[in-house]
Image (cartoon, rainbow, N blue to C red):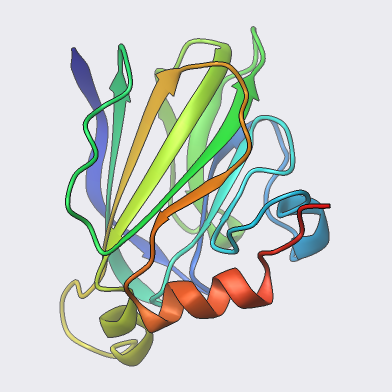
Length: 172
């Protein structure tokens, strides 16, 4: 069973989209947010926070967030990464873009989650910053699961490869 928690076009700047709880948000410290990871565009090094580097630096990107009862089937997206995070009890969970430009709350119960982030159009997002309309889109799927190392399941775009090289490969 699956619940759609969000399905909208988010306005962002600096390509920042953060899912998390409390006051913790991405502060530009890639070493902290991508600590121990091999991927470089979905940071989960800080407990309770998943930071997604959107390809489009500014403008609108389509983002859909789904909560699943069990691991969802792997769909045919260009770029796919999985990370783990733990949401604590009694602290609200939400999403925001850079500097809280866009934000909202999400009905996610506390627990240990696996988070799959899939992307389409990352190269178009990088090259289409001033394009009219949406050029990149993201699917974020969460399900209860024990903590595991991040995994790069698919890389098809130059942009995802770039971020994996720049901010990834931090696993010791």
